[in-house]
Image 1 (spheres, helix red, strand yellow):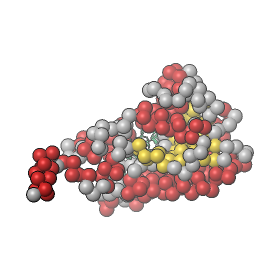
Image 2: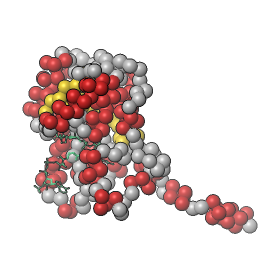
Image 3: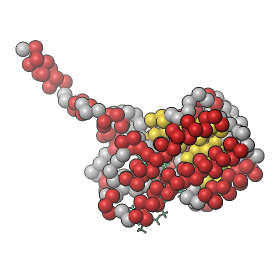
Length: 285
Ligand code: HXC
Ligand code: NAP
């Protein structure tokens, strides 16, 4: 990946990335590490974390610490925070990226299935935000939080109702803490990505049989998905001091997808030029 920021732009940062062992969390962790940050990657799977940490470290020559932590447990989050501080002496930034999701008609879900997704996404985010926030406030330390949401946090979406409800909650939490904790020099922002292929998301949201019926590319005016480099550069900027006056913002990075599908007349692009010619001639007549 190519970085838009200069080398060592994040060298003063100690960044915790939840769900940092795979997918977008892994790519963002790699970019932060390339830019000189000390990075802590956390999730439930020890082997995955250890492998990712070793691979990123060998590429960037910067320390990446793997720490097992289920974000649904406040105790585990507190332990992960303490482990980070004992290793690096401080923590400056939190990236709430861990998530769980699957597609299913809502009426087919059990209450436990609903809990599972909401607990990872919303409870996981507020557990981490609360533990880290308390630490920063107590230590009078300036800090930065970044939450990964989705564009259906704005619109809602059928077939992923638990995720939509939880991401909507994370959006409200982002704006609430941005307003409340600015006085402590803690910034809180969010990124709402459109489709960025990862094994975790694609296997659960666009499994092969569904791909035959639904092509996510058709929803995107650029007719392409996002690249991990594009997202990782945005995240690096929002966690860097270059964005120090940005607080409470949600940056959409989706190639225009959600607006394209919201604008009532955008589908008129399917009308060919010849048809517009005929329409103009009729109008002039
Ligand atoms: C319906 C399901 C289900 C499915 C699980 N459940 N998968 N229900 N459809 N596909 C139900 C189970 O039957 C069970 O309920 C309950 O959910 C808990 O299931 P477990 O397998 O025990 O949960 P757990 O082991 O904690 O795993 C959590 C998980 C799993 C969310 C189900 O998929 C996971 O670990 N995901 C992590 C990674 C992930 O999801 N990444 C994608 C993020 S993508 P019962 O009642 O039967 O016991 C994303 C992108 C958004 O967010 C936007 C894209 C454009
Ligand atoms: P992913 O690779 O499946 O990432 C999800 C991560 O969350 C995994 O590393 C997983 O690791 C971790 N996780 C799940 N449950 C956890 C728990 N209880 N405690 C701690 N960690 C947990 O999927 P992704 O596509 O990269 O998604 C990353 C983020 O981007 C998510 O917030 C997702 O909603 C968002 N997003 C993705 C897309 C996309 O197109 N890919 C679009 C919009 C938003 P373990 O299983 O080891 O715990």
